[in-house]
Amino acid sequence: MCGFTGIISKKEYNDDSIRSMLESIRHRGPDNLSFYENENLHLGFARLQIIDLDPRSNQPMIDEETGAVIVFNGEVYNYKELRQDLQGNGVKFKTTSDTEVILKGYLKYGKSILSKLRGMFAFAIFHKNKVFMARDHFGIKPLYYGFNDKGEFIFGSELKALISNKFFSPRLNNNSLFSYLELQHVCGEDTMIEGIKRLKNGHYLEISNIEDSLYPITGEYFQFQMSNDKITDLDDAVYMIRKAVHNSVELHKNADVKVGTFLSGGIDSSYITALTKPEMSFSVGFSEEEGKFDESGLAKKLCEILGIKLNRLIIDKNEVLENLDDIIYHLDEPQANLSSIPLYFLSKLARENATVVLSGEGADEFFGGYDLYREDSAIEKYLKLPKNLRRGLKGASKILPDSSLKRRMEKGALEPKDLFVGEANISSPSEVRDILSNRYKDGMEARQFTSKFFKNVDELSGKQLVDLNSFMQYDILLKGDRMSMAHSLELRVPFLDLEVWSVARRLSSDLKVRGNVTKFALREAAKEVLPEEWYTRPKKGFPVPFRDFLKEDNFYNKFYEVLSSELCDDFFDRSTVLDMLKEHKDGVKRNHRRLYSYYVFLVWYDLYINRRGIC
Image 1 (tube, rainbow, N blue to C red):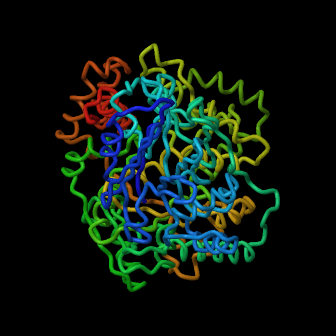
Image 2 (image 1 turned 60 degrees about the vertical axis):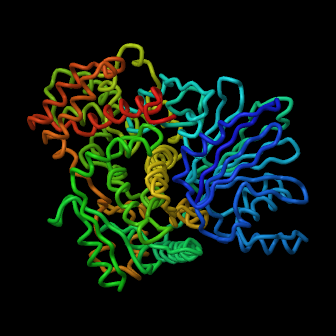
Image 3 (image 1 turned 30 degrees about the horizontal axis):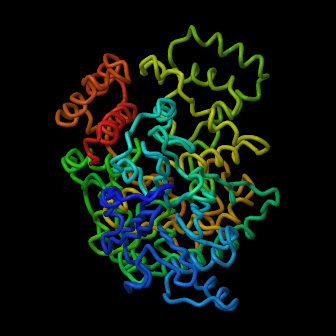
């Protein structure tokens, strides 16, 4: 795993911006920094050596026969198979790297090479005055692009690389703030920086003639779709899940460096660890006392059963406070998922003993793992009432005090596409409008992005598609990439594999959620290698006791300093925010997740828009 950045201009130019851009992301690849330059193109590449450690595999990589050049971040797990196929068609290789396989494959097959790649990737290829970029099927590896103030096309593996271009003036994308406050992340193609876009998962980008025009055209080669050819038999499902996951883990273990696993107490990381059988696994917690905020004791028990060494860290809350702004800086975009905090420390711990780790991301979205996929029994009964009656009761509920009954009456009048905006939902649209300054109140609501995923599918599939295209894309995978790469660690996610997806997309609803059991078929599949205590355990992950932290003076004072600033007044109703902070400290109301989202945004704004942390 590595990082790259580039500048394309219609005119010949001499400028050293590419060096500052690459320097801002050198944490992604500290083993080698290299550049490629011609009249119209400047490329920078930071390499983290994983496969073929020889310098011959450094990038930017140039094909001597055609002059084509590539920069590539990620891993292609079936590259050996593709290499053999290309060699059978007369293609010659000079390295044993997957980078050269992508380059030669593109020169042979054009954009259709994308359908042959099995892995995580973002790359850019330049050949005969043409640009071709692509991002992997699931959006595991990032790629940003846009234009600087000179009209040059700039791109890179992280947002901060583009901000570091000295001719780029960052401005806030006002339309994105609303949905961020609802979901704790920004959805869709646009970022929080005006004019900077993400290349979406399963998409490619082309510029046909860079001397004539730098206008990029994007296309889609993959999208998440549930299959109508359903697997309904549990035994069939278990067999196919095991076969696909086993194969994926074997491919993901391939590396010329040390490989470990992340391990919490839940089924996803436990299943991956049991199949990987690494020399070492890594886990973190927030308390010496096992329980709500520390599952590392469960990880230790599993490692003892499997005969694996566990490297376990208990995070001190003062370390969290000291590193909070650095975490926000490395996240690259405003993202307020509290699990980024333990992941930052977990990645730092793992990098001391490994260069690659396998983790369990994607299992919840693929196999139906979130509690919100289980319908509340009271809501389920309520939804059976006629729609007009439910709408009338919603209107009547306005005079009622806040209660579970009132919330059910409000929810019951909504359709799933309006009610469910994702696992990451932390604020309602009305709560967002109450807190935002007037000029941001008309921003894009989350449901404007998410409602389309409920078309022509059952409710559970709709919820999964929302999270696959939102929460997983812009939260789970973003924090996984940034927190691991902050410490030059490659994070691999075996569940997010085309063969695994080909099974998951076919599962009938009752094989995903059965009664109160989520990920039903996956749990049954994991029985082969896990004790019952692990394959039956509810989802927990790496929980964070931030609601308790924020009641302590040092955290409270840090938040008060930021939330009482003039900058806060530019975006939020400052008095309301400070009232929320006091309510939380006094134990009147739990406001920590919303307060954390305000804090993250304001610190991020200072770092990225005011450039306190960039350049």
